Length: 334
Image (cartoon, rainbow, N blue to C red):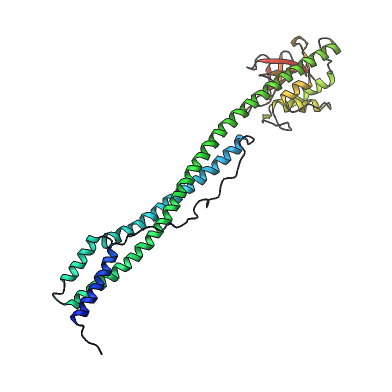
């Protein structure tokens, strides 16, 4: 059977509630220090040995590192946004329930409310205590989340710093590899030029020993070659072409001498090595004249004229040998 509380019972309940409120007043929303597994969650760029990798390989590796860094930076931004949201919950709970001033204000209002009705005062205090308890739990959960996020953010920042270091190392290695490759290419080109010069010198010596100052001349093959080349007059130049309807300069010579069963390499530099040096005064139809650092070849057809496939956009034509607009490298005989 319900009965009214005595004044002593009412004071006891009020005292208990006020003690509970006072206990909440001293609560600090501390972090818990949770362990995070953020570090290393991104796929690492493949390992690379800079001492043996090519500049191209290092450039690919650098692209992977930069992509990885972009992903880590985006993750860091997302983590910071989540931390801000968690901190907002903590700050709101602290402002409303976590300071002695805020709680004293509510308790004072509750005590002074409802005139002198102690039951109404107690009800107000109980409701406030429950609301404060709920907000504390919410803030505590947000605090634990914030602690986890702080650990994740620290790991993300360290990952970014590590990637920045790796990117700097990769850029330096790339520049060094490019420089080394350029130096090696230059050395190889110089060695090839020396070898070609030595080979030409030896070839010239052998030719002079075999036939004096002039290589032997095959009139039949030369005549057939000249006629074949003339048959192609007006056909288009196409780089790398060797017939039947388009030609480049060396392709035309290869096709002309194939008529007589003579094989030449489709390359001006190789063709130079496969032929014999002659003097300008010894030129005969069918002989070859090389121009522009052995980058172009034409066939002599007599009377100071050559036939050749000049360049893209042009056609097989006859030109005076001294009107080519290029310096002469030498005169050769097949």
